[in-house]
Length: 232
Image (cartoon, rainbow, N blue to C red; front, side, top):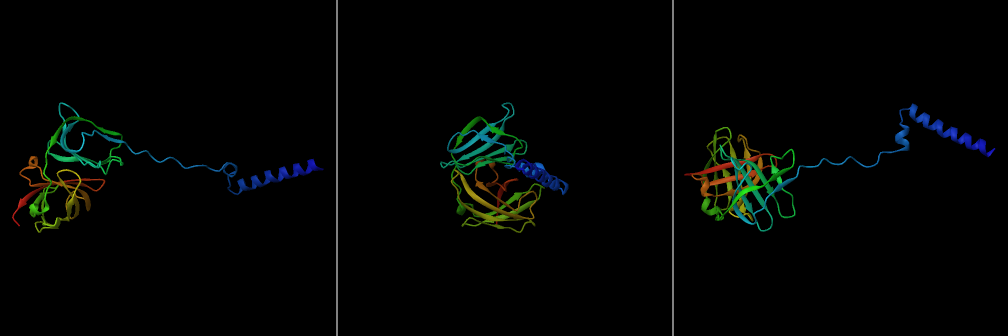
């Protein structure tokens, strides 16, 4: 009698599974539920040589046709590297690190692991820009060849000029990176520029006759604007 009961229960269980399958159920998932989640996609690794704190002119890539760059390194581990296209002397790759505990980020983002090794480094002695001394009107050239202007106040505030429909505004404050001011830049109606970007303002004799240069990004696109001093 006990054996007949066991058989009856066994047939009942099989019948229940068959019923679930017939109604669209999946007996395999009923017995073996999915465990875990798919692994996240691995982000490309960015590695950059580190000559140490300070401001540096660097070169990398092909020794016969090197890519030139500017490297700014703070004592707290914050870093910024701007690599330029030689023919147009415009930054086409920005690499930055918030501090020593953070990973490097490259803008635009690489599709595979990226290692930047330096062929040569040359230390630079750069004075820290002073917003009061920079106060005035500046004209920049946009990617489509058009011009725009903005004004820097003695308080570091950037306001739009009236030269064109491109409106540039933002602010400048002290930066831990040597030879720079920290930049917040907003733009509207400006060819090739993102609506908001962060970066630095630099003043470097290598950029003459430009009085200053804005290097920034929005996480996707780079900003490289040379500012030529004009009468307000």
